[in-house]
Image (cartoon, rainbow, N blue to C red; front, side, top):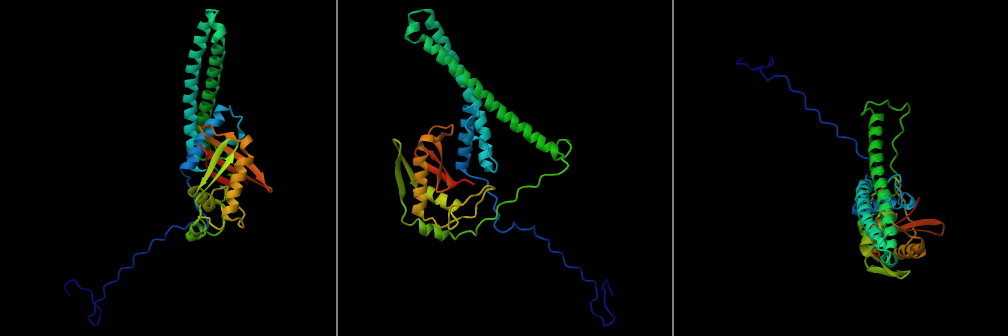
Length: 293
C-alpha cells in the first residue's frame, strides 16, 4: 500500500488526531471589585503625614498610619521616615553650631546679654528636636522591616510557625455601579473654579480637583476605583452642594487644622449634619475631600 492506511473500500482510514484542548482562562475579578494602587497625591499625602508624625514625636494622631491606606501612600511614608532621619541630622548639626556660638558669646559676658544666651538655649533645643525626630524616623523604618520579617515568618517564608487560625484576607468592598463618563462631563460643563477665604488665606477648588472628588466619592459620578475603606457622599448632593461642603470643611476646621509635615500642606476635619468630612490643602489648593467612615 506504499505506507498508506486504507479501509476495506480503499478510503483513507488513518486515525484522526484528537483536537488540541483550549486552555481554561483564569477567573475574572468579581463584578464591582477594582484594585487601586493610588496616585501621586496619595504618595504626597503619605510623605507629608509621616514627616508630621515623626516631627511631632507621634503626637499628631491625624498623621498616624491607618488601615486601608493606598499602596502609594504606604511606600511614600517610608520615604518620609528616611527624610525625617536626614532632617534630624541637619537639626542636630545646625543646633549644635548655634549652641556653640552662643556659648562663646556668653563667654564675653557683654555679648551674652545681646543674644548669646538665647542662641545657646535655642541651639540646644533645635539639636534636641532633631535627635528625637531622627530617632522616630529610624524607629519607624526598623519597625516596618521587623513587621515584614515577622509576616514572612508567619507564612513560612522565614521558617516560623504559622498561626493556628489564619486571619482571612479582608473582602474588597462591593460598591455602586460605575457611572458613565459623560455624566461627570455634563455635570462639570459650566464649572470653572471656586475661590473662598478662611482666616487670612484664599483657597481654591479647581475643576480638575472637583472632578476627582466626584469620581472617587459620589455614587452618581463614581469611576469604579475603590479602597478597603471606600466612602461615598450622599447621592442626592449636587455639584454646588459638594462645593459648599468643601468650603465649609476648610472654613470651620481652619483654626484646628493639622499640619501634614510638609510646607503649605494642612488637613481639616469637620462634622456637618452628622457626617464627618476631611479635606487637604496644599498651598491654598484643595487637593482631597471625602467623608470619613
